[in-house]
Image (cartoon, rainbow, N blue to C red; front, side, top):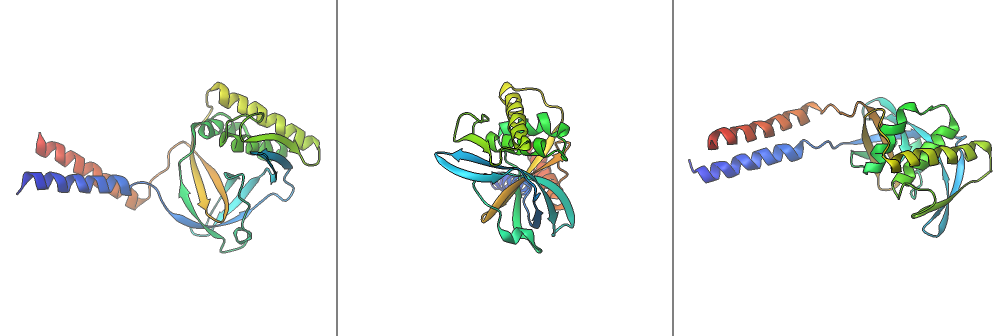
Length: 223
């Protein structure tokens, strides 16, 4: 057998296994927002935008599971089709910035999900980690509560505290695997899974094992 050809074939198999092991799927999601969510106005690169800062309850129609998620896209509105079954197809991914990861690892574990100010403050801080992690600078500035309520004022104070931790590099209190849910016509979402590790699906695990086996076989063959 041609040794060079064997090497190339084995490398191709190993590379295919590694690439195919990346998590990827599309699920139909039905999204329920908090109708009493605090509302804010923010200046986005010179233009004013009204936003609701809240936590979403999400029903995955594909897997039959439910989870909580925050908005991961400030400038995209929610498509009405996401509110009713069968929902909209969302693709799962896992690429986030270091600032977003730090925000969750530092503060999500202690967040009171029944407290509207804390939830809204976390959401604002999350949006800011997509910019420069500072409410006073960058593309997102001049955050104001639309009604001037105490809930909104407290939310802005919470956001500032959380962002100070992000900028200062405060230690994390927990580890999270962050899953982004993306749809081209509707607001993207982000879900936090405790533990920092996501168990691969059986097919993914098999392909990963095949790729590792290919690499081991190559090393043994060439040594």
